[in-house]
Length: 145
Image: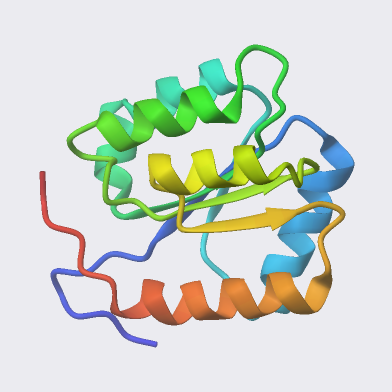
C-alpha cells in the first residue's frame, strides 16, 4: 500500500514486560496482516521516555499496545500520561491485560483507551480488533505537532 507523501506508516509501541506475551502479541499482529514496525518496551519508564522523545515524534503516528501490570508503574499511570500529552493524546491505545475487573476496564475507557482486550488473548477477537485498527491506521491522519 502506498502512502501519500505527507503520510508515514504507523509505528506500533508495545509495552509488555512478559516476553512470552510479547512474542504472542507480535505473532498475532503479524497473523492479522499488520506489518508495521513494532517497538517493544518491558517497563513504563523506558516506554514513556521513548514516547515523549524527539525520536518518537520523528517516527510518525503511533499505535500503543499497553499492558496494565508492569514492574515499575501501572498501565493506568502510563495511559494517564499519554492522554494528557499534547502530541500523544490522539494516539490509539489498546490495553492488553489479564485483568477483567469491570471497574478497571471502565477506568481505562474513561482515560481514553480505544480497545480493552483481556489476556490470554483470544486470537479471533484480537485479530478482528487489530484488523479494524489496521484499517483505521491505513486511513489515519495524525496532525503534525
